[in-house]
Amino acid sequence: MIVFASHIGDHVAYSRFVAPSIRAVAESDSVVLTFATVDGASRNNNLLLEAAREIEGLEALVLLNEYTEIIDAEFAAKVRSALQDPLVGVVGCLGGRGFRGSTWSNGEVSGVSVEHRYRELGGGSMTLFESRDLTSGLGEVDAVDGMLMVLSPWAVKNIAFDEAFTAAHGYDVDYCRQIKAAGRTVVTADFGVRRHHPLELRPHHALRVAVHMQVAQKWDLADQDEDPNSERWKQRARRAEAELSASRAHAQSKLLDSDVNIAERTKALEVYTKTYSWQLTEPLRWANAKRAARKAASS
Amino acid sequence: MIAFGCSITRPDLYRECAQPGIRLAAESDSAIYEFNSKCSLFEAYNQILDLARAAEDLEALVLVHQDTELVDSDFCSRIRKALEDPEVAVVGCAGAVSVRSIAWWEGSVVTGSFLMQYPERGGGTLPSFSWEWEDAPAYARTGEVESIDGFMLVLSPWAIENLRFDESLGQLDGYDFDICLQARVAGRKVVTADVRAIHHRPLVMLKNHEGWIDAHIAVANKWEGVVEGVGAGTGSWKERALLAEAQADAVLYHARVHDIEREARVTELDAKISAARKSIAWRLTQPFRLIGGRR
Image 1 (cartoon, each protein chain N blue to C red):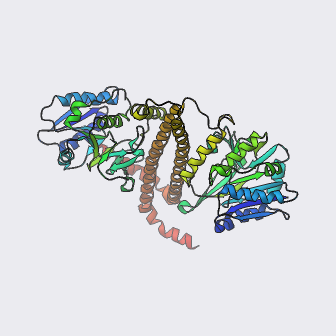
Image 2 (image 1 turned 60 degrees about the vertical axis):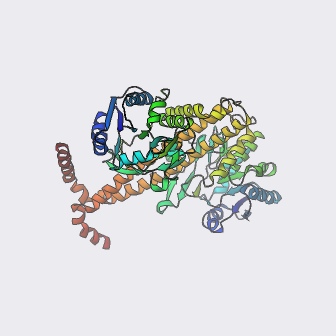
Image 3 (image 1 turned 135 degrees about the vertical axis):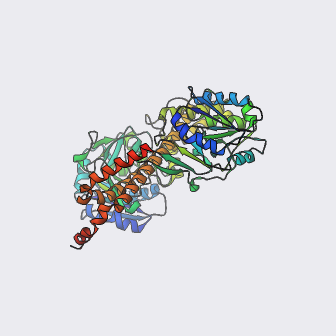
């Protein structure tokens, strides 16, 4: 039996996106577990894990966050196929390998492109990780993204989320590292999913830094006993500080490029909106927009 | 006499950018060293230095990148003014204080009198904050700095005589910060002056990632313990490594988030442009615009 589980902080989002998609892909004997969100991502997931452990005949536990919609009619079959290998502990739709710290997407990215829908700026959608960004084929990775994690019965029974990870990121990477440390594997599969999320994704910079360091401190096992001022650490620090400056420069370059792109389009739009005809007919567009909004609200 | 020097690896770029600027700025007696280079920028600049040392009555050596265009016709008199103080060794048009690494722009930038002319997206220009002084922010000023941007740097006779570009540091990057450090350690000043330049370059800041990283490390190792703050940090090497890795991770993450937000903004603008183009008002008034266009 495949069990679907979510902790819910945004009830509206869950009802709108997740619940209907579970109904669409669940099998007749599937169980759906839900709990209200408590403090800390790992604690929430452990609550779901504890409930899942009580279920007999569990084949897989699908942990879904409240913004993830499954859009894959063959989802159950793909879950079973991915878990055929008894060594597989976790399956996800996006993951990475060869990265340090808490951001799997800084490594080689494996998985499927995911549609991201948002409501700001008039609403729209975009693709997270286009095929050119998927630098590695489906298969074994170091960690998968917490938007969708399918846990094997072995994982449900034996590995809990580390509740020291309270933020909304990092817990997924830590869980996958635990799975791998226990000799099991983490893999990606071609699950079709869609993500509904505001564009404003960023957690506080300092929090992100802290979580990265928390993961690095815990999993850099080979380095635990080494002199923190060794030549190897010095070289790593020098490299890291240089990479930090380079990252900032790359980020700045990208920012400049998108600013230029936006400025170009804003100018193109002004060709239309600065005309007398456009300004004269503005009240009509305003009334039309109001009418459309009323119609959308009533339906 | 004020001499000009340029290391040329792409003659077409030199002819298009640096050469017109040098011709505009140079005086009738100026020497111009056009150095066709097959070596590192450090070596090329040292060879230009050697040529300059042999010149008589040299007041200054102006080194420009091949993609840098000087724009002041009175450039030489501005440089003479900046070099009136005999302690000044290096002059630039962009620079910062509190500089800790070859990423000089991560310091507190006080002068940015340049215009970036980029080729991407059909081309365009981005003026830096003191390109026009009347629009400059309150912190903008010329004067003493810790490092200047090497795309245009001027060396005093003392600097020409006493400084060398350190060829052990790499091929292309970090020479500017290093030469500024050399001057400062010798008790001389590095300053920005009221001169301007156009930098014809892509929006991408670092073209050679690995080379730049190597230069960053080499300069940090060279100057740590010699100049306060350079190559230094708080905590053990392990703590510094983990912190910098975490910060870089966060920077990359935020860059991706910015990308997503801006992509959404582009989509929104495209939708508005498309709606405007298809609107009845626009289509109805099309004949008038056509007539207007013919006039």
